[in-house]
Amino acid sequence: MFSIFKGKPNYEQLFSSASDIHQHIYGNKTRTADILGNEEFIEAWLASKHISLVTSVIKQEALKGDIPSLKQMIWLNDIYYNNADNLTENKSQQQKIKIDSLKDRILFCERAIALGLTDQSYYAMTSCAKLYALLAPRQTDLADETTKNALNGIVNHARRFIASGYDDPELIDDAKRLLAQFAPIAALTDAFNAPRKQITDGYGEDNSPRPTPRAHKLKQDVPLPTQLNKGEEETPRQTESNMNSGHNTFFQTEINANSGQDISRQTETDMNSEQKAHSQAEINVNSEHQVHPQAEINANCEHKVHPQAQQNINGEQDIQSLIEKQGMNKAVEIIRDAALKGNLFCQKFLSGAGLHIPEKDRTDSVNQDIERFTRLAAEGGDMLSQFNLALLFMKKN
Image (cartoon, rainbow, N blue to C red; front, side):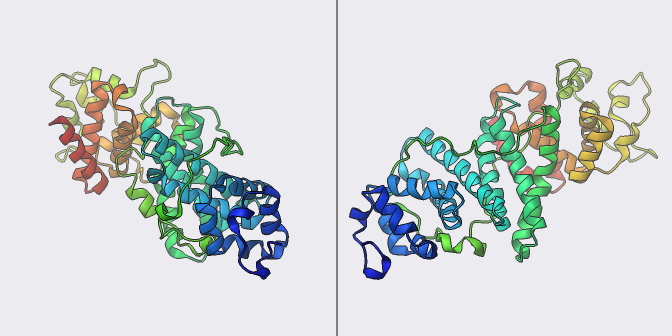
């Protein structure tokens, strides 16, 4: 009755019955992809009062492994995410729609990846980046699984996409940039907590109804599901532009496991009130070697330069190697030492670590460290740090 070969169906009547919806879309599996990608079908579906019923039918088939349905749900959740602000005026509800949509999208991407569609790891990666950007600023629990899963998802899916051999150098470069940015953060985060669980089917299990989007409110530049493999979705550069608030960083890193106090606080305690020690701890251009900060902090004591403080720390592998060899607390100490001696990567890392901590949880010493390392990174030419430094001064003034 509802075959696409017999003229345009009465969609509103069709969408009122789950069995009719299923028969129309899945009665002939060879036509499923064409039906789901048909613009008239999509417009009628998104504008229908039965949108939830149609979506439920497609979602059930997607969870069973139907590839066209998986792509449809990946696309649909991008629609919800991009149009959350149009669906409700309630800010908290907008946030919930965005978070739920990203969780669902990750779920369906991972189902598709498991079926061999490794190119979908790109969309899983960007979705994890967006989810982390939403969750990280609100983070108060270092062991929060959803935030950790999002962070590790960025790294895992970036690596998978790079290894896939996908023939698009620009997208591969996007993945490499996100990997370089978040892999060190994920490594240190995991070191603070017990081994994390992988992203699981727990994503998207909340089947609470969402507001019904109307076709005229939807953005017109969102790609159709049939375009998902063409790399036309927003790139991680756009994702990163939305994350430039300074919160796309790391949980508080400087925790001393033996004393329960953060290293930055200990360092500040040892420093005199005029805080001249840090400037003295910079590279002494008149000497033949770099002076360990502790040697300047305590003028009456002699300290040898920590051998690891001299090494270059410029990326993910250096951080991971440092943690494995030195342990977390010593690694943080060395990173801090390198930052004070001019290592731009370490300066950016510690600036981001501090900015990630909710403002209400920051001590005076943490705020001083945030300003110090952000300033050093900004002076080193890092544009994001320059932006964050400007924000810090705006808040102070």
